[in-house]
Image (cartoon, rainbow, N blue to C red; front, side):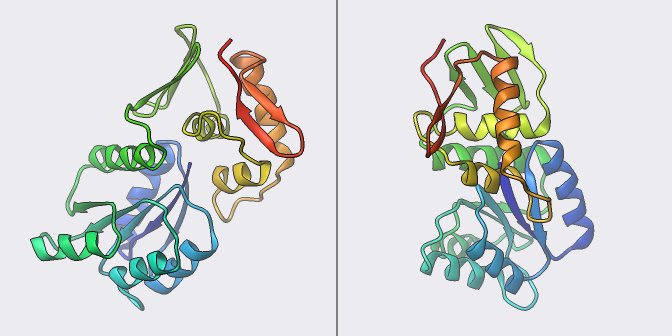
Length: 220
């Protein structure tokens, strides 16, 4: 899963980046509203964490521009302003959830997971496909009840597919959601990760749809 982090406080941004990467997210980041507006409009994100008090362009304006342009990615608003009218303004501008500073990292991660689930019409933090179970809270995967060790890229790829059961996902889309912006992307490595997941879980788990991409196949 790929995330955009927009926060002008360098210390807090660094702390959040460490926690988000540790939780399995590919993270892009910026410290101002103009760059945030451009990234959100030109890149593909599963969720955005957006501070309201930004230099160059405030967070509410960034959010309004995204929504007016039709960008529908889930947005979690961060702000030190804990008054009711700021919450209302953020939600009315197109925000999906609100978290006031200071906050615990665990709560931030829980809200992000919930936003991603809701954007895909899923209710539970535990995703299942046949014998495969993926716990979005702990980043653990099991098959037939036995734990399976995955690399960060393997986990993100599997999580992306399991959030979209039955959907054909192109290799380009997987590449966009698997890597942060500054990563040297190579779509050919997607085939490598798909092969590893088939070996570690079961061969029929991921179906190749010729000319289109990949999807989770019927349970084994």
